[in-house]
Image (cartoon, rainbow, N blue to C red; front, top):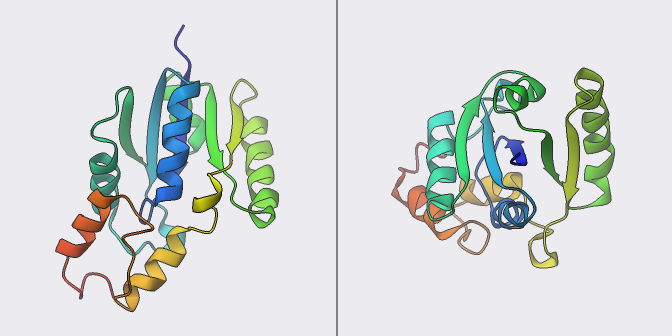
Length: 163
């Protein structure tokens, strides 16, 4: 039986830290579903369609990866794809408390789904989507923080879209 993992997030936008986690997840699992959340609460800078496009472009050369959008419970999404593992990234101690609570919550909803926490490589540990969004608001350099495909998409967008 194939081991299927889901990596859920808003990916607003996907960063090199996310990409690092994706690459390392593919070594551990047979298939990876990257699940891009609608996430009305976070009020994303980019639309769901733009975020899905950015992720798809970033992983277009990777086998055994699919990208989907979702607006339901992560465990429900996992069940629909027969996934047994949720992937979560941890950059710093500050992430741990929230991610631990989320992992316990998901386990309380479905105890057959495990959460695996991965840390990005040290060179990516400081990168977050919110840092990238803040830099974009000031038209600052971001090409060292996001995959080159994402930088190209962002560069092609009008500045009014990013405000």
